[in-house]
Structures are given as C-alpha cells and as structure tokens.
Image (cartoon, rainbow, N blue to C red; front, side):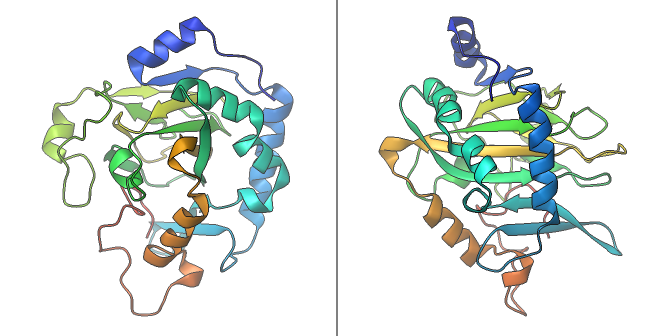
Length: 263
C-alpha cells in the first residue's frame, strides 16, 4: 500500500512545519485502485442514513457533487486504507501516541467547483472536547494551482486559535496579512497536517477534477467518537436527501459546515 516509512528527517519536518508532504507515498497499484474506488463511490446514489453526499452549484442550473462522507463502513478496500494498520502507524507516529479515525471525507472539486475559505480545523473539531487532530490528505488526482490545490500559511503553535469571522473561518483582515503557499501534489501523494495550521484553497479553474481524501484522526485516549460525529452532523447539517423542508441549514454557523462551498 505505502512505498515509504517515516524517518527522523520526516519527524523533524513535521515538528517544524506542522505538515508533512510525502510524495509518491502510495504504491502505483494502490494509487490506480484508489481512482477506481472513488469513481465507484461517486456513482453510488444518495442514501438516507448511510453514506453522505453534499453538493454545490457551480452555476445556477446544475447541482455539482462537492463532498462524500461516512463511506468507510460501506467499502472494504477504502476502509482498510482509511483505518488499517499501515495508515494508523503513520498518523500515530506523528501524533506521538495511538490514533483513531475521527471522520473521513472525499472532496471532489470538479471543474468550476468552489474553493474553501481560510480556516483552522481545530474550532470545528472541538465538539467532543478534543484538543488535537491530524488530517491525512490522500491525493486521488494531481492538484495544481489551476485546479485549486491546497494553500497553507506558516504554522501556529498547537493550541492557538486565530481571530475568526462570524462563520468561524479566519477573519478576512487577518487572512490578508498572512503569507500563503500553494502545495501542488501528484496522485498518490500524501499530505499530513495538524488541526491548527491555517489552510485554504481556490476554485478549480482547470479542466479536470481535483479529488482528494481527507482523513482526520484524534488521540485514541480521547475516545472513538466517529459514529457520534456523523450522527451529530446528520442532525445539524444533513445531506440534501435527509433535510427537512423549510429548514435553513446553510445560513446558521455550524462546525459541520465550515469554510466550504456546500449549499
């Protein structure tokens, strides 16, 4: 599955940058299979009470798939990638203690798809009293500046929450003062980052999708709350096929709808 193991140099980069880019981390075979697995999930119909599909409007006449969550229980190969021993070993080493899956999602970012506003993950992940998370981004496709690759600012100390706007994203005045660096990746690359480093991405102006898995983990000692997380998200920001008519889910600030173009 993976072509590499972490070493002392990787540990040092992680400690310094709060993120770690691992080019070609997936074997060629796994990277090719991952594309097929994500194609399969994209073809699945909306399913109330099971996997969760979220949409955006790239224009007024089309509903565009933006994100899919809660899929690990329904796809065995992806379940192994998401919470198998090889992945957990990488995250646990960076965590400094055993880690457990907090949530999993795929961002599709199709051509014309919207960007993600500058934010820290920590405020959105504090629902269950957790204080630290690590997210592993697994690139399904190449991500370039044109297709809206991730952008990171300089790291901030663990535990530091920046000034926010009313919706929980980084305050625009602060965002404008920060230096942002684009991180282009190839399919099969992995990028790990902690829940305090600010990040964002722009719209996809290219001709191809920029699909990526975003797998978030918490300390095992803080408890396995994945099922509770998705139960709460269904309550406060459900997928369209589960929404109650007349309820305005988009305009109410929520940790379950932070900085994304989902409608």
